[in-house]
Length: 433
Image (cartoon, rainbow, N blue to C red; front, side, top):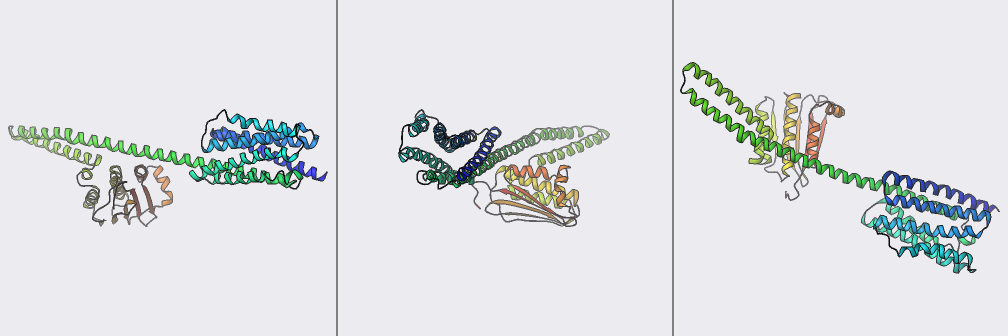
């Protein structure tokens, strides 16, 4: 009697844990709409029905409950196997599978109502259960070999061990050797399966995040490319059309000035001066829109020229250190580096006008790197997010542009310790250092 009570308690505990497992899987299905979560929920629901049937049998000793226990045991194994097949390979349903579905109720009827030999009755059912469970483990193992996942590993190990455990039923469990420890061992397998399912969720979310991140990076690179193409178009339009109009206007004014009196000639001269100012402004705008040096000379001379122009406008020491050449980065990467240096030097002009500046261009097998350092007043780098949110430093736009080409920006600063910005852009795929 005491053994029966222990078995009842263990079965009730397993039923409670199984109901929680089923609820968890259905909740995951509602949240993520993955079919395999629904099938896990169905499998655990049938497993719960199996446990309730054996509980009813232990209380009433009615063989009908034992029949339903055998039916739900076999169908649970099939549901778990179908879950693993769908998750691992996505195999469509075939009519031949109905034979497997029909086996548990058919054989349970023969075993419970038509056979007296226990081993003959239990053997095929146990073998069917073990093969289905081992097959579930093999499916998750195949998935694990293609897609490294700790969740798939735990599920594979759990169901492989569970399938082997089923084989001891005719020898040990049917004789009460495992009572009630067999229930506790099944609970451990059940908890292992739940742990694997939760880790699968984490793995799928991580995969989804990686895909979404790659899509966003691709979109960002595309936006940077389109932005630069638009700037290039505007630059060419200003240089080839508007600047030419101003140049023609200057020639016409010069010709007019030669044919008028002195007073009107002076006014024409002032108009020519204004045209010259307009032409300089157009050249400055076209340079800002699309640095011609990048197209004409390449990345390194353009960077050197930018630092040289910056140094010519200030009295503080400004140095540029670079190798003789840099490896190839993408067109978008070149523009991103140039713009990042442009923005960094502009920040120094605004916030550390009298500070010495040192710019380093370097490269390794992975990326081209710019390091822009000043020994100015610096700032509290822990407030960087607040400063960017307030629109200061221009770092947010720099980060977006560099991230758009797969690069990275790192800033180090402290009050009275200057600022150092490291900008990295990956090499082009066909680049050879």
